[in-house]
Every structure is written in structure tokens, then in C-alpha cells.
Image (cartoon, rainbow, N blue to C red; front, side):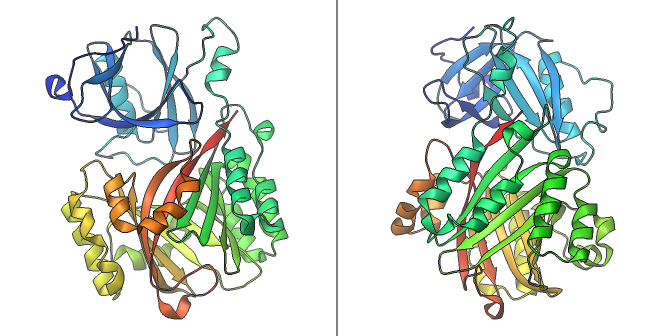
Length: 428
């Protein structure tokens, strides 16, 4: 049952809060940041940690089921008492156990590792993404569940963004989009996510699409072959993209130049020497491997870590690495990390070219508005307004630096600030 307003506050519930995004009825594309608490069969939503509950839903225990898996994540479907649906996306076995505990008051006695083959088993903080279906169809309508899983038009949103930037509306961009499976080509239960990465001056734009290997592997292998990828490049991609989640990216610069490549789940066994070298500077879990694929035989590589520990510990780990490799300019940007919320995730990237470390990135997931305002000028914030529509939301704030001798084309000189946007998804 939906209540228009409640007087319950977070302080009264004494919960562990979960950051989430809930789709509003008034707009198909608009997502509002809320906090969620489940207690005594009621799911409460809060606009801020200090405000009274704005909405609440009654959820009976046992009204949930495993919907499907998607690469590293598992989707759980919960049926509300009014017949509407909520989808939880969890990425670890610990997240799954926590979620089951909330809805059953006990941890299920089974191993879900086969459903989440690449997931870490000891993640400390859980973040759930929640989709609320606002359809008026009842559950006995055979189309109800399909409507709940309809495409959020990630492909359309991405194409529209490219049209607003005339300099990315190129044959290269259209070839890139043709390599991404369309909604009709997706297998049942598969999901393709669309992201956008834009530097503060809006002169460098990167499009990223990712999905399960079952639908992404073959078309991307063919696409990289047409780009002129070497047989060695294609062989490596073929091996790395055969399982897990696979992504493709296209990067454009307004001053000229475009690069293309892929990103996959990192597998230490595939890069033993590289993994051993970077393990000396261990700062967290190594998540993804990103590679450029083009006719140029010299390709950049990127390794993405999730930095673990308390915010102050995260800052110290990153400081030590930056100081060791003498990225002094980037070091000046990391003071904000120690003041982050405990739930905020921080990522760190090594950029490698010709087997030499050439750059580094710091990514702060779901940054608050004040941090973004401090990191960008008013003029830059205005330049980013076209990207902040109802169809996108800010996913991360990035600080990056590439050594001067490697700055060319799509790699500007100096410390750069980027915003990452979530442009939606297509789901079969």
C-alpha cells in the first residue's frame, strides 16, 4: 500500500541505509536519488538522510524471486502488495545474502556463486539500484512483466547526445553503434548499458556500451577486425571476452582524433607479468582491463581498481602511488577523498602505453553536487548542461593526468576533470 506521506525518520528506524534510484511516475526517464530502508514488512524511501519518509510500500515476506543474471550481477524481482514491481541488482554473494535476509529474516542455505561467476565474495558495503515499475497493468496481464523490463532507450539517448555534438556525428560513430546489438538482437534476459564520459571543457567525449559476452562477443570481434586490429589483438580480445561482461568504447576529440577499443573483466591469469608488477602497488581489487584497438600498432591499456578501506585509508593508498610515480599535479586533487561518505566508492586507473606507465585516473562514484561544483568552473558546468537531461544521470567524477610526452589527439595535457553519465540501457 502506498502512503502519501509518513512521519517516520531514519533516526527512528536506526537502519543501515542504502543509496538507490527510483523512477518517478511523472517522467519515464527521470531518476531521483533517494535512500531506502526495509523494516517490519515496509519499504521506506527518504529524499535525504534527515527528511521524513516521502513514500512507503508494504512488502510481504516471500514476495520475491531471482529474475535473471547479467554478467557480474544478479537481478532480484520483488512484488509489492499493490501489484507493482521493484528490481534489485546485486553484484556479490554477500549482497545477495543481505537482501534475502531483509525479506526473509534468514540467510538462505545455498551457494549463488554459479549465478555470479566473477563476483567478489567479501564486499563490505552494499549498493542497490532499484527500478520501480509504474505501469497500471495487473500482474495477471501477460505483458506486465515485459513492460516492467522495457528498454530505457539507452541506444536512443546515446544517439541523441551524439547529434547535439556535431563533431561526433561521424561515420566512425555510426560504425561503432552498428556493432552494438540492437534491442531486437538481444537474448531474453540480457541487458546492454550505455555510458558517456565527457571532460570539463566538453571537447573530449567517450561513449561506452557494455553487456554480457553472449550478445557482445561476436559482433565486437567482427567490428575490431574491420578497424584493422592485428591478429594478436583479435586473439587476445577473443579470449578475454568469451565470458563475463564485455564493453566497447569510442572516444572523440573536438580538435581531431578518435580512438576505439574494448573493456572486459580483468583476469590475472591472462596478464601474469603485468599483474605482478602492479600488485606491488596494491590499492584494492583489480576489476577491469581496457584496451585500445585500431590500425596503430601502439595501443593504450587501462587497469581499473576499486580502492578499498575507510576514506582516509583510500586517500593514503592513492597518495602513495601518485608520489611514487611522481604524478604531483594529480596529487593536489585527492584531498576531497578523506571527506567522502563511507558508502562512496572510489576507483583508480593505471594508463599504460608501450608497457610504460603514462597516466593515472581517480574516479569518485556518484559524487554530490558540492564536490562537482568545486571541481569545475561555472562556464564548464554550463557546457555540461546539455548532458544533464532527464535521460541521463551523473555516475562518477574523474580526475586524470597523462604525462606531457604522451599528450596528443584524445589525450589533453595537464590534469583533466571528467564527468561520467549513465545514459540508460536496453533490456530484452
